Length: 396
Image 1 (cartoon, rainbow, N blue to C red):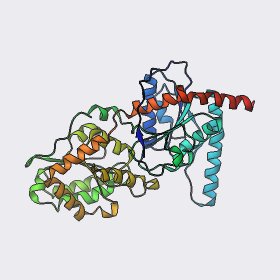
Image 2: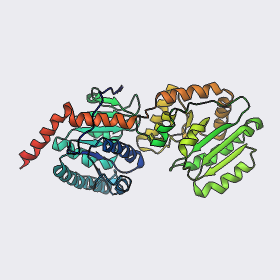
Image 3: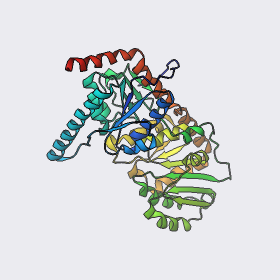
Image 4: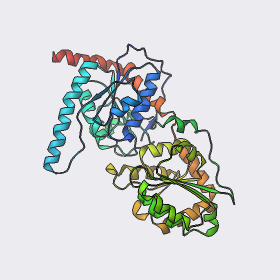
């Protein structure tokens, strides 16, 4: 169980303050909240540095004001040789991160989960630097589980997060997961359910992994709907480039009111606002955007996600009444068609789910996370800064 964070307003920090060190890398699901926090901290004149793995330099191009330091990191590889290689790389990263911490003397280290954050967070623990962890999903990830004991704050995105150690109960706060500015800007466009005979706008976002299952199942499911419902549908669907022609041919035979297919949508905030129903995966960033805007969704978790975290995300919102979860083996044309027909004939159910999802949204997550970090860096938790300075003095 987590509690919403309530803090007094935090004043801007002077440019002479010790930096906040962000530890993030790997996928965009970890890097995006780090980027959003960095932007918010910079707006408050708080110096920020990023420690990442080899995939992190793109961050520096997005935010040139943030110095980027790279350390070795690795995901857990199978087999004895693979495990030894992982341990060796993480060990090298740990010593590199210790060197960066010694040079920069950060006020706090913020870890965003994933193996690329491990060396830096572990180094901070060894050096006595206070640690804040941010968990984007409804289940605590492996890296955050390993580093959770003894942290100053564990910031979560969901109201309830599975796998929290007992030692974190008093330091866990719900800040939410930062969303891009375009999403936050449309927060106040409230959901309007489809009219009795009006168009029904269906948005299908496949994501970078597994979009093919939507390309295979959605057109086949729509073919099973009554002709009257199909004629009302306005479908916008993301497909892999190699699937576009095949999916287009499938839709040509369906008698759907209108169809737009693309491998990438550049205007997702506007499309989310206009959608009556969204169909998508259940990654952390997608979930945060759905909840920030408040739109009903059928969630099909990616079955191979680490620790099956997408299923936990989908289950959490579905159990609250803000979405409908369908495991990929159950995501068949027949079952999807029955679900769609029920929802389209009961628009009040769509409106209720939209309201629940919106209630879970945190469009100010970046500000709330920044408040948490600054409180640790320069508030009562800052006494730990003296402790880690003493660590280096003792080492000398």
